[in-house]
Image 1 (tube, rainbow, N blue to C red):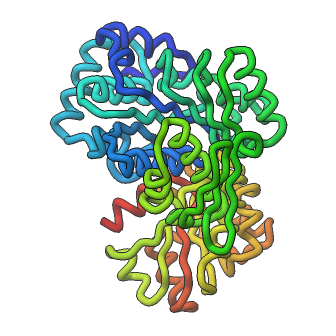
Image 2 (cartoon, rainbow, N blue to C red):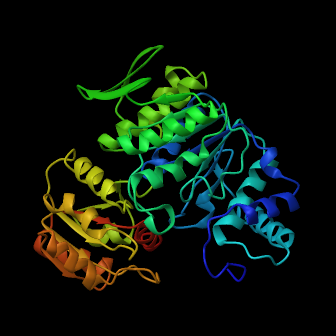
Length: 411
């Protein structure tokens, strides 16, 4: 962190310099699938990884942010990087950087790329951290495939305030002649993606044009130009996960994988803090007969997707424990949840400088019609909820940073 520039300016110059000092590991990776988008990047990556592994392939994967431990960001041939390997990589990157300014995300991304270049695997999955065009992962000249999940408003302080501006950043991962799988998009975003792909001669595999996915009688139905698949619903819950599964299946089909791999994508993917049921640990014990769930979505589109997904669960009184960052649209996030939640206990995210104060979260919840109170912490909120509603469904939500705190506390 001592190397971190005072202001985050999105640029690739620092990354290129460090990669050059390390003899360009980005040129030595197994075939890369590069994934950008506002929502669904992590879930889509998890499904593609499950599908590739179901097809007998070994897979590197890079994701961010981590939840409980940094090692979650770097999967080497399907396994979290070890402590000795991570320490060695970061030391080598630090020495090669030679004291130059570089952001935390940039140097750790380079460390991940270096790790992937030195361990054998069949594919590399790279998830964009922020935007796409100037993201530290956008250093692969010719990936095997690019993927753009749904684009919506988020990170406006870095990416722009309109869908057109944000989509331009996301479309920055499209490479000349490289096919791009595109999930469902607002018209403004799709216009930008199509224009970028047209300029670069990149074939698009776009939802609603080249492939379709829907739910029918408790099954996932997928159709593209080569035929129809009838698959189990994703084990990740919600209509948005059906769309994410469609993106993953399109990627797998393009790469030549069969229905076995596609079914593995829907049934084999796991992704923490995406409507995750916590099954054991001290917080679960404290909840007694109440259900305890965790979700890290944090923008209006995520709030809408979460509200829809919750309606798929068996009926129970829903109570929220919510903490958010001060850079997020809290009103937009909470509005779709207000119609289904009985109450909201607002918490500040521990040890997070950019947390919204619990009082601000509670006020925003009240303004959208929720019965909202402040709580000192998650455990206190759980105790208050089960005192009045022992059979509650308790959802801890609002931030991946809060989700990380919960996963660490719950052991």
